[in-house]
Image (spheres, rainbow, N blue to C red):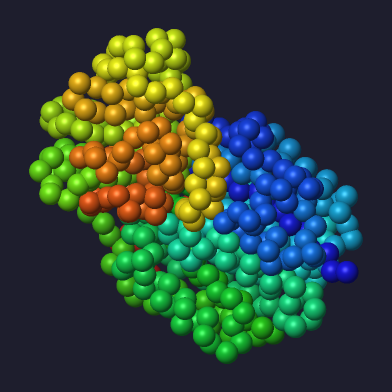
Length: 478
């Protein structure tokens, strides 16, 4: 019987966040092995759920873990996770193939290309001809090591990420074909010298849409097994930061190179399209105050939890207060505020960091999402949560765990009616759209400060490759 190992180690690492990611962050979020992995991930709209579907009875669960985006992994954290993965792999051998979910923008203090190092260790143990198919996030910074140490890499094609399950099924199905001798992948990676700012990474609309139109064209080429576009993660200061293009052809390395190069060249020729002028907090709130299209969702780009930010910035909410706009909602990571609300009790009047109001709700912070949403998650835990209502009809949600706003259940589960608010402040850029678009009158990305600022030029890069457009406007792509 064919045996396909199933694994996952995912983290989006923001190297500008001073707080490191430690092993306990993974253990407290999701870490499973063996039968528990199947129980946790079967049916999930995540690539690991897709692996299990695509591999079917051939699936051999190994090790899967992820943590909320944050700072770089400590060396100890990385080594412990890698050791657990390799230990589960050893116990499961012999295998005929392996599918693994990686992020592609994981950084460890000891290995800036942490994903590439994981693949290197797997390749060293499993051998040169062993099928290793890996999935990666659309925001990945793909390295040449990742391409060299894998048999095939397959990336998400939507942002918000709504196709993760499909990519997982595709990866497992390709692994089965390779094992049966029905396909012999030849992989090529092309890395043009360009960045795609996160504000331009919304795949349903131009300019990002054109990248994926080109991808769909390549997928129709005879002999192409799969192809991917990675728009990159600008908050990881690593050598491979930037956009990349991958193609995997059957038995034909020349075809793979031509396909990857064709996509990269077409993107390069349109590089001037990838620019976004975002309004300031002052302008965004002023416009929202008079907009007939309510609620207005203000995306707090600089405090994007999905990109590693703390989720505690009050820049936008303070601007709402300064302009005396009524009826806004904001979710803030604030464990101390939660404790104060819990101590005061429901219906009590509190004043927390200048925010005065009545404690309306105390919640355990668990909620469930039944629809397909960015990240492929279905169960969430934002820790003990407190809701405070102010005299100006503002709703302030304090959480004791950082949580990206991928599901509207984050606020619906608290009894809040978001469609009745004038302004909804969301700590994200593109990812929350799938959750918020059903209730939004309009969505505005705002140029707020923080470790996920929308302007790449605002970061002090020390390790990236040179040149990179638009940071070097005269960059050339031979």
